Image 1 (cartoon, rainbow, N blue to C red):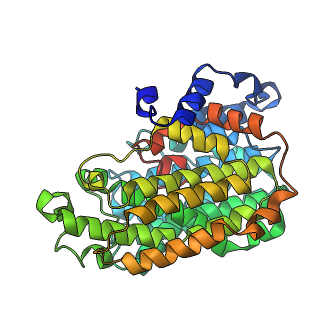
Image 2 (cartoon, one colour):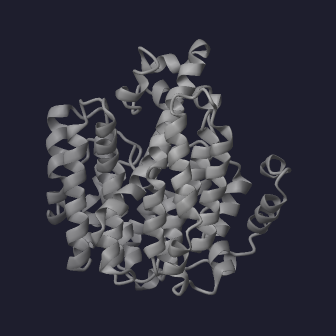
Image 3 (tube, rainbow, N blue to C red):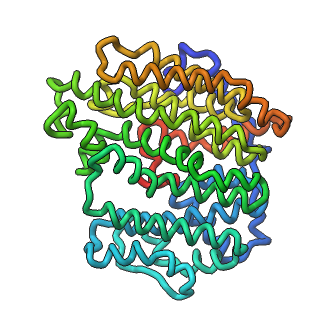
Length: 418
């Protein structure tokens, strides 16, 4: 079925075959479990259980950064499990979220009252917290700080709807921007990246916001069916009296206008994404960061002016996703991908769309940035010569990631809780 969907795209068929015959298994990184403590092995087991996609890309990170990001993910997974659990009363949930960072230094703390599918990370939190305390101080400080700020933000939005566009940015900052900031600080702490990568919180925040907004836009129907609402009222109230009206055929024109407004808003983060990626020096970090971003702009292109957002699931082809993963291993390729999907969106902009002028302006800026030689040259002298093996490695490791880009929300499971 995957091959059939890519029939009009020969390059995708070739890349699907390359993945499916398993030609890159020999270069997959193998963790040295024998040298790990029992608790660290358990942490990697939990990582695989809660998100095989993220477990895969972590294995491609270099050195001690791999363990730090693993623990960072599990701590945020535990925090997000508390936030998601509707069976926990608010009077208990709010202090749990606000104080969660303190549990990292309480060796015996655990929580056995969750009913969520990932409750094991709470029930066996001592295993995670001991490995947190085994990390270097430079990593512990980052993880504890981000956990604290995210917990406070989650508590704030428990009973608060996303009303204004500013609140949309704020919500996305709490649940995804802080992840981008935390990861960037870990990259710098590992010395695999320059200190400026961790210091520039504005660019790091945009990395997270672009992914989270893409998830929220794409997942309109699923969220509505599950009683959740993340589209900001300031946007949808311009076109309907109720957010759920967009799922009705008679409101399709208004629904598309709102959809296009939100896609346009999300696209404003793309210049920051280009600037951020152009600073990265380490190949494993670049791959780790670039692949989700190119998936996101491909998904936004698929969503733009697409009635399917309100009728079902918007998917990008798996062959398309594999191709993106294999290509997105250097700045020039990433700029080309961004330019390609920006052009696709441009071709779909309607003359009658209320956001037309704003959309055209941001697409023009993205085109300028994606064709800029400055971003390319800033990283060119750092690029690893082993593009093909790195690309095949990421394609092999990341097959499960495709499920997220093919209709299953990658939000919480992949460090952007939704």
